Image (cartoon, one colour):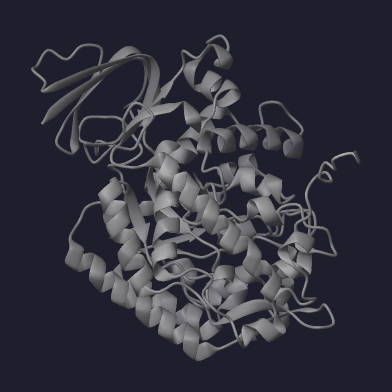
Length: 488
């Protein structure tokens, strides 16, 4: 089937870079782009005139929330309440799955629909293991793959695994409890999923190894991960270099830095993606200057999550420095909303603060990270660009809403004045995923009610994990006290 989109603005790809095409047309047949230009003279089966929209490559989210968001609960924790958001040491011996398999499946569907509604076309999932009995399973991800295929997104999938879990001891000290056999079992589940993806033989489902945080994996498990990744030629994503507590834990356990641990276990030789990549030598709380870490990260893709970093009080030092060093920067959302438009805008402005100049990071550099950077991280030159021969992955954002103000450059206007909720249409591998702001076949009202119920289940379970036994209402007090009816 041959389809044409026409729009006032198209972010096309020409001569190795993105370019703006006014009053442009994009034509694809089946899963491949045929034409990007001003006028297609051939026949089409479907012709859609989007009008005052910006059509651009589908957004690539490589730390995409596949969960009910917990940021509502834990991004504002005080020093007193913060330890209550992790497992107590006692809970580690009696942990349970908060959600049933059916509930977990509903959580995944809700999250993937949110990605589609926000213009994401390719994703690599992330979910909190705090609500699981340990980590993710093969069965969970076989179900997630089926849901992803039904919705039509392009996913790089694999169950998470770990050897240890962060806990809080009765005296308030943070620690890590290890169970290496659980880590080995998780890696076996991950390898089983690699086989499952091969059997599916679906271009929308690719396999990846997605171990948890670096401090919760032993060197043996990290080494085994690297060996498996090289043998099966799959990418690895490992949350690493994201905080001082992680750095201190790795040094205490292994007498090295997290970056040194990546090198000694062979992970730097893999197709490695690192969210969030914040805490290296140039970070002001480490040395405040580059002592070789940026060079050591050559070949690694840093998954930058500016909006989530800001909400948890951290920042990349800095987008411009990493980019000048030649690192491949790609983007992730990591929390709700999965809004890469807001994320890019936040990143642009945080860079100004860090580097002290208004042009520290441009809108176009962030758009490149959300498209071309993600494609490079996945080894997919056929993604992240609108040019003949590329995959037909594209998204359209409306620019005609009065609330978005006047229009200058369409990309800059979208980032400054809009959000990903401006998305109205998307296509993945030539198939419509978002149509007139809706995901076909999805009861969004029913899904919202179901998600709210599941959030209540998730919220209530925090109380059973708290080292001090506080209830969820004590851990998460309201912003203001409740209204009290006056006495008659």
